[in-house]
Image (cartoon, rainbow, N blue to C red; front, side):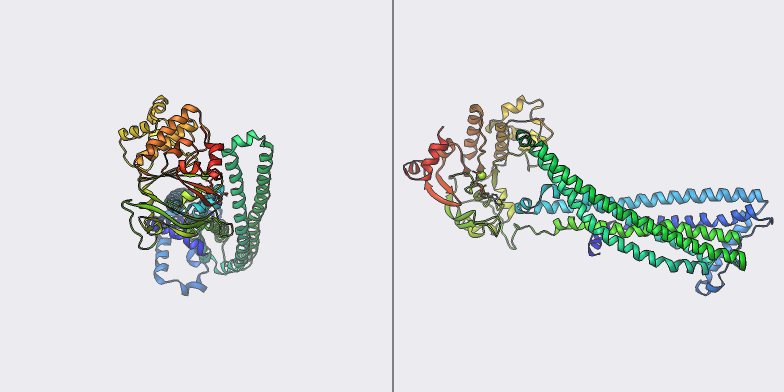
Length: 618
Ligand SMILES: Nc1ncnc2c1ncn2[C@@H]1O[C@H](COP(=O)(O)OP(=O)(O)OP(=O)(O)O)[C@@H](O)[C@H]1O
Ligand SMILES: [Mg+2]
């Protein structure tokens, strides 16, 4: 229930719309009641012999309950009956029939207009609340640290933002309309039924609680099943997402059949569960319906006795009573469904709130300071790191100093920990032991934005957003003049191929745009970093082989990028290494050698010499 209250907190800002919607609900309910009331004089007109067809409301068996009804209400009712008798029920039978028919049309027309308005204003509330929920969850998601994204499956996250939010939305719409409109409708019909025959009405409400209990019970089962079925759907999304992004690998290895089987297994699991949940949900309505019919039959029996034997109720009144009671059934059934919906919504909402309740591992400390200017040095002091508490250290006792303006090259065998090491500098992760200091301040004392703002990062895998080349280069910069973008592209050796593209700088790249070669993508990301003009540059050189010409162009771009900056570069090319002020050789999470190219190459037993001979020879 607390989850549901939390959903409601998103609805709260829309209270004005809720009030308007409630007002229309009230009008709707009153008119629904009126359209039933009109049946009584209609039936009298059609079936009674006598010419004067007076509404006999006053004589109805209210006597037993009249104590509870305030005087003014009785006066209003008497005035209304008087008016009704004088204007509607005057003239001959055909006149009365015409009047009543016109009234019935009017009542139904107004009822539907009010119903429409009620639904419209309620929709504003639901969709608005869901927009806010989605936005809030997304904003929080963007605050979360990298470690969260490594743990969560992408498919799972996507499913939370699409399926789960949709479930919450549809349930809110159902519950809110139902919880306001249906109880009001029930109340009105109950009032009508009660005013016609309180004995019969009391008989009816004795049987209702039983059905309610059954409905609550079914709701509980449903909640559990829905949560399982949502995670199954997430599994399907996951597989789909994996095989789409890995389509080349799947085809190259001829794994289509394997992937198909994996997929079909999940869809079948979903199928079985879906059937189960539908079985439960669908048995919920028949059960309520059968219960309703039993109530109906019992009432018809006793009501029939009142009409036939006792004569305290006229046939038309009894018909009116039955109409009222039967009109109560759909809203009662809808109310029964409300509980299921609340349960479903709660289950879905819990999964969304899970995102919002995850505290980011990496965040600003209290009293953290702005990082305004990089003056002196970056220092690693005995830094150790592991991704999971349970696993062995990925980095062990890393210590070194980089002075402002230096180029530090990291080399070493694959999996040694180079990318992990540079990820610690912008605080994608925090060291498990030791400190990283910039100008003698622990970077955990610096404001995250200001720290990352000073850094340019080009990663091993280039990523382009769906958008134009221009937007991709100027990512994160508002209103960047085109000349600056062109300048950066020129420095990154990207200008030429951009001009060759169909729409130049406005050409769309990314998922839905033109396809660029590996080297072209790299040069675009280098241009992006250049435009940001960071003081500290982190460059994870792509390992993918480029053709000679492309290689030279990229190399030139990298060299220009490093000018006048402090650069960390994970190097796979000899030319990059030659430019370095200092080289760190990383193996198995440790610094095994440190020095310049010339120093290291002379250590014949060292790892660097071996790597140089295997990897770096141009
Ligand atoms: N998110 C992660 N969770 C757990 N372990 C990880 C994660 N990322 C990397 N590792 C592990 O950390 C170790 C170092 O990886 P890292 O990516 O830093 O190596 P690298 O030196 O950059 O290799 P390469 O030259 O191939 O890029 C590897 O053993 C890898 O399996
Ligand atoms: Mg790496």
